[in-house]
Amino acid sequence: MEFNFSQILSTSMVLFAIIDILGAIPVVIQLRRKAGHIESEKATLVATILMITFLFAGETLLKVIGLDVESFAIAGSLVIFCIAMEMVLGLTIFNEEAPETVSIVPLAFPLIAGAGTMTTLLSLKTEYATQNILVGIVMNMIFVYIVLKNTERLEKLFGKSGLNVLRKAFGVILLAIAIKLFRNNTGL
View (cartoon, rainbow, N blue to C red):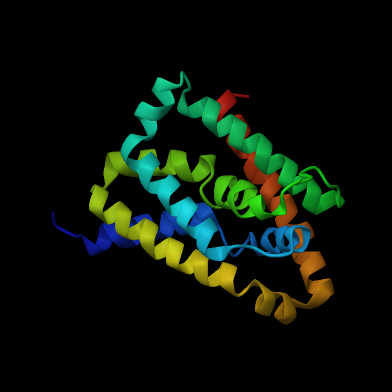
């Protein structure tokens, strides 16, 4: 088992771009407002477990339940689309009866460890050594945890109008990601 710095850097950068926790800051703040709080540790731990589990057993798990990677990605794209519509239009689609669950759904899955992340992990596995991908996952999840723990500071830093602009802008970006995921996996 040999660690390769180049592979670790490559997997870390790819996962950083896919997870896009900086782009999700407005979503995280909005979810925190709805729920009253975000359990950073819980969200990070669940997302990490999901990613590592999917790295090792993703294809097998999907086959066992009769799904292919494309169907999984399409379902994730629809959830991301709904979240993006909430951001852009100010709608409330996810009406949580139990606010404590927002740390798991939709934060840990599908925002952090979503269909894009999962399919990316399967792709990375074909090119890089598993231990290097694991290090990339851990590095990204440490950064995710730091961002989640500091959402209140980030909220103060950006201010109310800054957050509104960010929420709308990243809502449109999230819409584009959802549509891209949908198109890539439906062939449309």
